[in-house]
Amino acid sequence: MSRKKAVKGKGGSKSPKASPSSGRTGKGLAAAAAPSSGLVYPSRPSLSNSGEFYDIAFKVMLVGDSGVGKTCLLVRFKDGAFLAGSFISTVGIDFRNKVMSIDAVKVKLQIWDTAGQERFRSVTHAYYRDANALLLLYDVTNKASFDNIRAWLTEIHEYAQQDVVVMLLGNKADSTHNRVVKREEGEKLAKEFGVPFMETSAKSGLNVELAFTAVAKELKHRTMKEPDEPKFQLKEYVDKEMRTVGCCRS
Ligand SMILES: Nc1nc2c(ncn2[C@@H]2O[C@H](COP(=O)(O)OP(=O)(O)OP(=O)(O)O)[C@@H](O)[C@H]2O)c(=O)[nH]1
Ligand SMILES: [Mg+2]
Image (cartoon, rainbow, N blue to C red; front, side):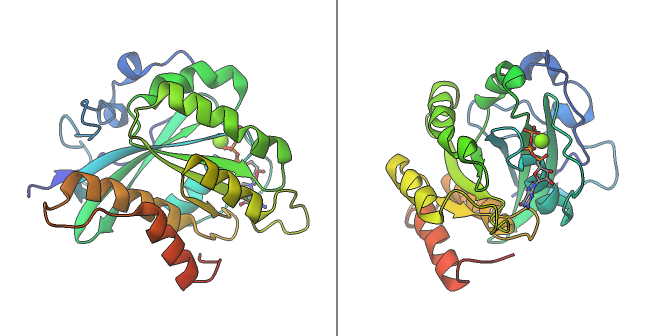
């Protein structure tokens, strides 16, 4: 299998007027032009010599209400740090790349961090179409963000590909004193919609690696499954990993 070189670095915020077709010029954005298969191939190697090699690439989007912790989750996953302090709401859309080793295959996730604010919704819609996976977040300390999950799922249904991988994440699980949404409620909603679920914390790191690894595994298996290999069961994998490590893995 030939190895491709990952375009590294931050994508940079896109203006609200950007669209997948018009905005994808420049270094990071060139990699975002996805063929209809959903796989993302860089059109040319990165200009930087520090680029990492990878075998396959996928586009993952973080969606959910403003303030649920999408940017913090991405920063935790990418840099292993928590963005404490004042809340800086994302403007438009931005992406970061991360190459993961999944069963000896280098999988590049191009992770798009969307703005949760209503005024950017039309920008976000334009990016759904190319997404291979969506991490849909709510905040366990914010009931409205949980109640809005149904509307988000309707939106996903409307704008994303039919076979997009969706995972529901109840973030800020570290905030025990401010919690207003029980884990069981998240589990129930996820079951109703047939999507895998876990609680996460960008602050403590709880389940952050697991959420992205599970999605990367599912996408890698879909693409590279041998004919005699059993189908990868995402929900079973998540449930097993959660059982193995109790509820809490960072
Ligand atoms: N306690 C706790 N706070 C968190 C966590 N994740 C994010 N926060 C805080 O929640 C606030 C919002 O986080 P962001 O990641 O910026 O939220 P967002 O979903 O990206 O918001 P938009 O960009 O407006 O869509 C910030 O003040 C973070 O510090 C978490 O896991 N635990
Ligand atoms: Mg943000």
